[in-house]
Length: 408
Image (tube, rainbow, N blue to C red; front, side):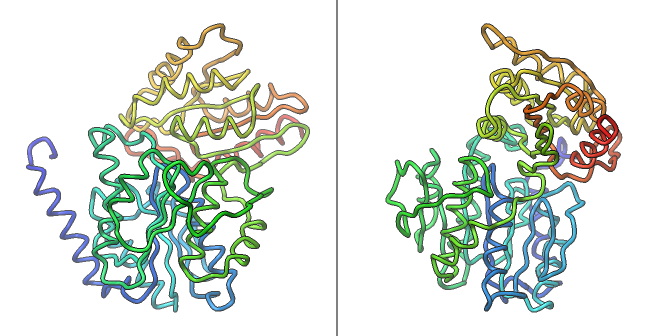
């Protein structure tokens, strides 16, 4: 249909759905403090940590809701996000906001995606604050270029500027190369965070943040963004730091599934930047299980991810991820093409299309002290295959079952 119907008709359709959804459910965002989190990587982690900080504050306890790629949470009730969609459609999203209001929630933390913005799912939500984590290449084909992708993310801050709410705030990663673009989109109260501080003076001031519970430099960035959000929401600085130091890990995000005699981690990393961040955190000489999403999504990244894996892994098992309607073998071949960019290769690899078999192979190859890292799906509950079918799946459970089968 998109080939024959003018673009503006689709845009009008999506806009009207957003308006009708908001009308039906009574514009629920007006009755809560709503914080949106956008960026390429780290969104779910930031949503979860902000939620945890709010819930750990006595006056806010029992009044918090959140929505991410991992879960829907209203007060103490939560359920897995089984949609294979980070930001739900307009009706479901507005209904969720209404349910949160009816449950007595005063705070809402939302993961906001470029695809969701493209379909106006963010419209008619009155945001109080917005967090920008980082920006690297993703969804390039869908947005027809990086600049369009960046502009889609930026619309959250434009909507924030037009929101009728008072005391609005934006939180920006000052170390990101795209900081200036996002900084110019909003003229209200702003908080900047970073480690290298190349772009702007960090506000609300320097802190000594040491985390043993969240691994990797990328999680330091996530925690700094969350720290700023806590301050912006009126929580005392030391209280925010105290909670961050004991915050739980996020499901499917560098999650340790097996600890002995070797370690097995599962992570959602599905972009070159995200993948390299994970590998850097874990070190070199890894045993890696790697795939890439099909359905024509971001084909450019496949050889890039292969190249990165070849730099960090001693054993690589290329496998299926979410092929949709593409040939899984062809996707794997495109990842493999990145290996040719490595001089003096010092790694071994094999192709195993069946993802369960690939995971089991990695577990069989691992020796005492090794690190196995399985990327691409994290805690996602489905594998999407040809014909629009979804197969129930969880990398973590597959690891546990395989480990028990091999090692008893």
